[in-house]
Amino acid sequence: MERMPSWIRQHLAAIRAVVVLTVLLGLTYPLVTTGVAQALFNGNANGSIVQAGGKDAGSAIIGQSFTDADGNPVKKYFQSRPSAAGDGYDPTSTGASNLGPEDIVDVLPVPGAKDADGNPDEGKQSLLTQVCARSKAVGELEGVSGARPFCTTDGVGAVLKVFPDRAVSVNQACPATPFVPEYQGLKVECAKPGEDYAAGRTVPIKGNAGTPAVPADAVTASGSGLDPHISVAYAELQAPRVAKERGISVEQVKALIGENTTGRALGFMGEPAVNVLELNLALDGR
Image 1 (cartoon, rainbow, N blue to C red):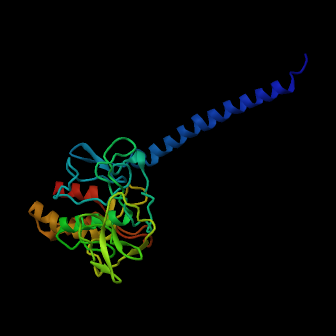
Image 2: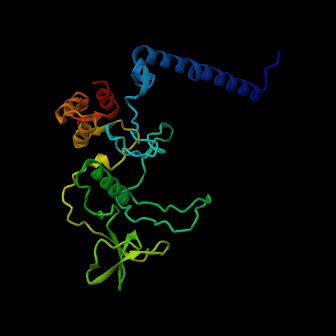
């Protein structure tokens, strides 16, 4: 019997390799790893679901928002940190905003203009303005100062575009009053939406806000956008509000914060953190 041509033998070998690797890597390996995960780490493998009253309340490892239908904070609950994952804590869109510390100039919305999809132009907030706006909102919610360095009192980035004959508060759309009346002898103007200020020198103004009362994690999103924890400092900032809304003492609320605080990983990595979902469920169940 004549031997098959070499090209046929090569194709048959390739087909056998595909079949073997498909069985090993496409069937056997997934089944074995899934079985081990279910047997040894059943809770984690199934999403670390937390139940309350016999119903799924959320995941211990994926954060969620505690807001009403309009996106306003529900005051009797502790609030999570901001999220850049989709519309907020969307596991299918996990990720950061990818905005860095140099992102400090807004794109102001132009009244009457449309975006590429035909929707009203909403502009684009810089990372600095997002932080400023969040700090202002948290400060108002918790009854503390939301002031931060490089932020205006109306919650946008305190940034000037400086030209030889004028300066523009580039994140404050007219008819807003600029956060400073002048800069180095130049009159400061409000920004006109749609005008190009790229040629100006960018000058962020630190101001005299001092150390912020609102913690950093209250105004910045995590790298994954899904962090279920907040810092102990942010939890303690919220404690008086939650205690007032629930008609209990601040000491009782702080005791629950302590019970739902996890320590540093391996005793030295990271910082202690509070699981927001578990803390809120503990409050509901007390």
